[in-house]
Structure formats: C-alpha cells, structure tokens
Length: 90
Image (cartoon, rainbow, N blue to C red; front, side, top):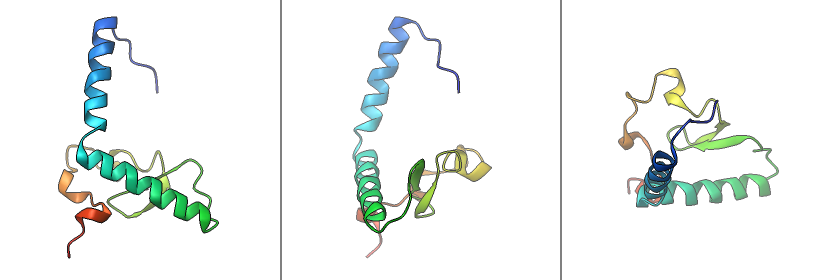
C-alpha cells in the first residue's frame, strides 16, 4: 500500500485525528484485549506472528483477512458487531 501524499498541514491534522481515534475507550479496550489474547496465545505455544485478533470472529487472522469485513466492505460493518471482554452480555 502506497504512503499517502499529504501536505505538512494535512499530515499534522491526520496525526491528531488518528491519535484521537486511537484513544477512544472502545479502541483502547480492543487494543488491551488484543495484547492479552496475543500474550496468552504465545504462552500456549501458538504462532501469532503476522496475525491480528479479529474482535468480531473472536480468533486470530492474518492482517489481510482482518481488513474490510471479510471482503464485504467496511460500510456494512457496524460498531455493534465488535465485542471486547468488557462488553460481553452477562
């Protein structure tokens, strides 16, 4: 994937937006869960190199397979389909 060609001003604005998005409570919860799952999988002897945890399917997938809603596109994919351990129904 080619790097975006942005002006300095646009690059700074994008960096601010990206950081703001990465710090949302939902995103932080997903990241923390991903780290826990990854550490546990490594401890269990699984090879997770080059893989990401898919919060919808609840398993490790290649980075490529974990993008774009399994080929259906991101517009059809809603936030409600993602679950973290804290958002499980009790």
